[in-house]
Image 1 (cartoon, protein in one colour):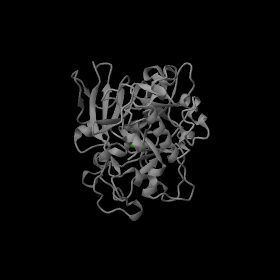
Image 2 (tube, helix red, strand yellow; image 1 turned 45 degrees about the vertical axis):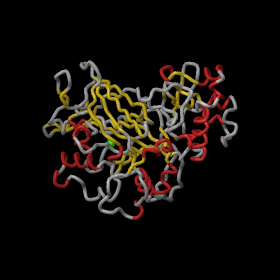
Image 3 (cartoon, rainbow, N blue to C red; image 1 turned 135 degrees about the vertical axis):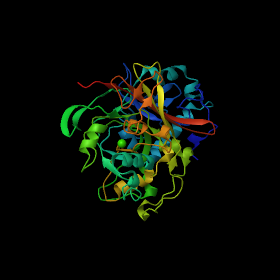
Image 4 (cartoon, rainbow, N blue to C red; image 1 turned 120 degrees about the horizontal axis):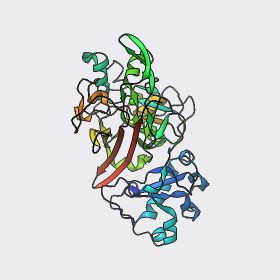
Length: 423
Ligand code: CA
């Protein structure tokens, strides 16, 4: 076990037990303030640790980080490019500095004031520059629900679905961090057999998580399921905004396009795969047996609790509309990345791979309005007596996620997005 994951560790910083950012987590992000330009931070309790300041005080001198300015950049990419040995060294050293028995920052008031900032006083930015974005479709429950609604309940899953992790290449330019609003898109839809152009009437969220690769491969080479996780830096929450009426009209024959590329939102803290190791669980049994290049050993799913809330101007407080779990996914990250590179497709530092909508087995665990309201036929009943089919302007959708075991919680914070009207 990595020392930084030891459940017996405590920090000299006071951290509430239900806080996502315990000393066993230490997720990386990019922040700025009025007087500090964009740089790498680590979340701890209610604070952000300014990693670049630590390097300026010589606290990383014993590590193999040759150029400490990788922590003074507007994205994590240059740090991630250093590889997993360095990721582990840096997380391990930060863990050491924050432990209650380590005096290096604890007993240095001036340094503490310089390197620790309240999270509420900083602005979180996109953590990575995303060169390429892929969206998988790896929840059997979601694929079955969508197949039942749009095609045929008797043959909801297409013949390929259990043989390969289905996915498509998405749009990287429109991925934004939590807090950046999304504007209702306009597009072409079909009404009463005639195509019309205007604002979507079926705006939806999709509850997903995404992993980020921190190492590249060469064009023409492939990764095995065993090698795959050496390339994965960490994970974020992911909201794949979708316009269902645009989607229904455009998706045949080539799949999602303008119904998806107007925006996707991510949580700003990247939780490392190392921090998630204690929360490994077995996935669903894969039957039929997969081809050898997709075979894997060990527990490769993750037990991460997920929830979605809706806040609307007409509601007194936010309402939980979905509770799901990442562990429901049929295909795991190792298989997704092995499949993605199986034809020799190269991957890059900062590439982002979303899971697909994470729906569970029960209706309350469905990860989109499309499924929660069964394409609008069974609207959600809200506490103020109104009904809801899809999303309205002014709505705020928030996704949260955390893993918990032996009383230690490793969380993702949130991705929170307001919907603005069409321009
Ligand atoms: Ca999706």
